[in-house]
Image 1: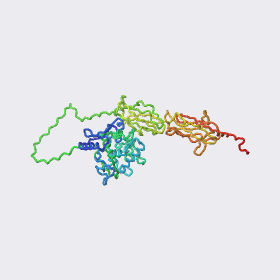
Image 2 (image 1 turned 90 degrees about the vertical axis):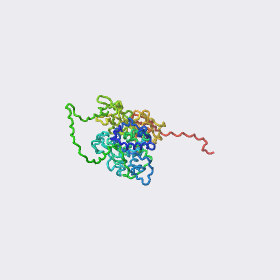
Image 3 (image 1 turned 90 degrees about the horizontal axis):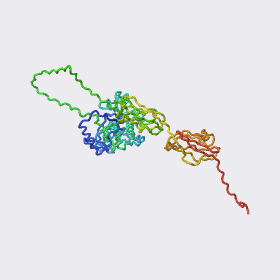
Image 4 (image 1 turned 180 degrees about the horizontal axis):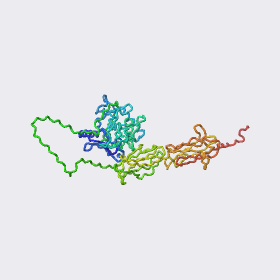
Length: 574
């Protein structure tokens, strides 16, 4: 997410010391790439937030608090031992994950392996985040279909130590129509769930309170931006995008490594519950010591209380000063301007060669950096941003410009809109029109050069096969038509000569609905000949104007060569 609005209060000195010591011990044996600095805090290579991390709006959770409990120092056993029911807070029991929750993580990871194999999402990462966000859905307190028995809600994001996120869902997900709250076992804020939500259990709904839906959504969230989670730097970026906090990163990495070393299924509702949250306040003032009873004594001589002096009429009354808040860059944005975006056009299935650029400006036209711009694809289209999402949030550079990720055209042709808006600021959005055109070819060639001949009433021995290209590259999925034409100058359908057959065996001389394959190849059905002899033409055309005319010959079979005449004496008697 963007800079974490994060934690309301720091943990007390004792809790911090314990956590630091635990991280120090873990760094040597568990968390990959984790080391410890001079203050006992864990550090990770490549873990510092980068500009593309800050581009993720308020992340999945809106900077809501999370559980900071670290895994036990003893590694779990891959196979549960007798009596390890998973209800304790130390030892191998902590490695147990409630059955339904564990099933949700594994199914989500399997689905991502199919839809985004390059992401390499381990289910243990979902388990680590689920542990840190909700203690595995509060120890697995879920129904059989994976829905939490009671809602899991983060604090309202009212700007009081957390992000300021006014209500975006009219209370539909979090029951709060004033401010947003993180919802469910993976703690999605409503505005993120709106585009990231998934139906993981196939019930036709996208419910952030359902662990199957939430786990699948978290998987897609972690797999966007083309990240490969088998690469440490990408793994760090993905976790930081969920919650942009170094402490959060190290806690998740520790649990990831712990679960990778072995875990097992435990009954729902029996999981251990974390105890230390990132907004805990362990430094409350101690209760005052009781006052010992006093010894009776002689009353002292009463004194006359002094009368406070009246303020001079010239002195203004003293009132507590209210500090004037410093405006954020977002507060200064007045409007959005196009930053030189070229025409957005691509063929179906292709990546758009041009990208959208938007500049945030003040009322005086001055560029504003460090502002989050949300790009949303609007309209009836299956085009997405690279990574498969329909929403992307990018932070403006020092020149005030945010460049959206590349668009990947789907198969639906036509126009759609990409809308740029300022996150956290009610200014008019900026719309960009984009167009997906049908796939086309500009050249067609035969893949063979064998002459195509046939005798009257027979069938051609060879089928016609062509290859389509566009700008020299393979043109796949291009629509084509094949017609047996009257002549080179008359493209109307011929009424005699060679023909195709339909499914019922009837004569057909025009084929429509043809399409080149993944290699740009198109192989036509068999051709047959009627009793008419001569030279005939087959014309193949594609979307985009590519055309090829193929010559077909129907001729009678050649007469057999006459054998040598027999000698006069042959066959005569003596």
